[in-house]
View 1 (cartoon, protein in one colour):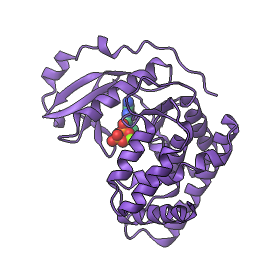
View 2 (cartoon, protein in one colour; view 1 turned 180 degrees about the vertical axis):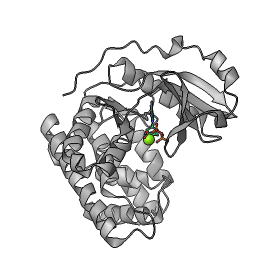
View 3 (cartoon, rainbow, N blue to C red; view 1 turned 90 degrees about the horizontal axis):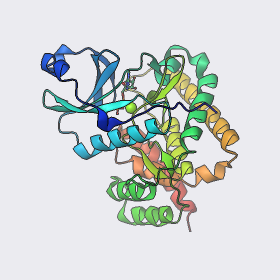
View 4 (cartoon, rainbow, N blue to C red; view 1 turned 30 degrees about the vertical axis):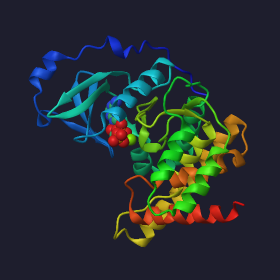
Length: 295
Ligand SMILES: Nc1ncnc2c1ncn2[C@@H]1O[C@H](COP(=O)(O)OP(=O)(O)O)[C@@H](O)[C@H]1O
Ligand SMILES: [Mg+2]
């Protein structure tokens, strides 16, 4: 298991780098170094980046990311230290310690032969996160899942009701869950760093692992991707998923059935996200196959 690092992550003691803000009046002054679905990542100042959210991104979610990142950091989990909130060009931003490495996803794309090694690392990091208690977090896994399922498009009211009733009966937990743990949210620079804690919550680790299994199982490729490439990517993704599951179960001593029972709500909740139609259809077939087995 990787060793936790002890750091003082007091985000409240941070003062915005005012001199820097005076100099940097607009986004075009900054160099883009990363992009995700919610935000663009820019170089900010020596050793720091700014995660600049899309315009009108909900403030509550940004604050959530600051709070959970601060908690993870203070627990000794290897995550970029959060320094605080600021605004640039009318967009909200959070300032973090800069990591000079690359994401595990880009490493997998460039060097697919590293997949067996780093998928084990992925599983170990996830299992380590799950050793920490996080009862203080407001977001509770089952509550979050049920809210999303309630809003999920493409499901009938009756299907939603059935899945919510099923979810409510699943075993509760109060461990730290990342909520979106996948290879693009882990960076590697010789050491490893877990980023993107916006979806962090307290809950049952098996539910968090089920979300990862869904993310590693279902994913569409852009239209026009040649069939051999699609097959190759699918092959690599299956390898990654199998190695992640095997190692996660080995380290935690759990049985796959504990993760499997969370697949239904994890798949249904994902329907609320901005994902391509093909991916939603794939999720729907997983959901409907499982619904058939419920009494
Ligand atoms: N502290 C950081 N230092 C350097 N690069 C980062 C840092 N945080 C994120 N990145 C890069 O930016 C990408 C997107 O960041 P992330 O926080 O995951 O945003 P999103 O919520 O939009 O997915 C990451 O996959 C990573 O490549
Ligand atoms: Mg991300």
